[in-house]
Image (cartoon, rainbow, N blue to C red; front, top):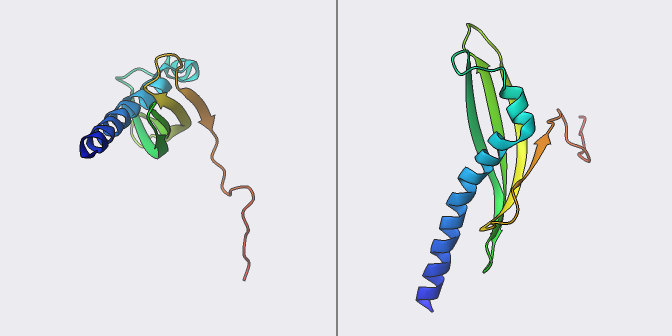
Length: 119
């Protein structure tokens, strides 16, 4: 029984690591990102990808995961602002049939359905 639990834990860790590279790769391969970065040369812009794990559910078949991936584009000129694009990436590991789903996110100052308390 202990061997089965250890095997399941190792498979879960392996699947988790695969999802890390899959999420950023899915954003890099998205048509909207490719079009946006088409005129941004590496010599003139610094492009970084960061991700935040939103959680996953693992079972015997694999893991369903969600990541929030940001693409930060900064001009290499002096005092240049950065542009940040945020995408929600969802997928299943292992899954050779479907590509991860990429949904671009717009951040607002306040969240819907939240209460504002005024004193």
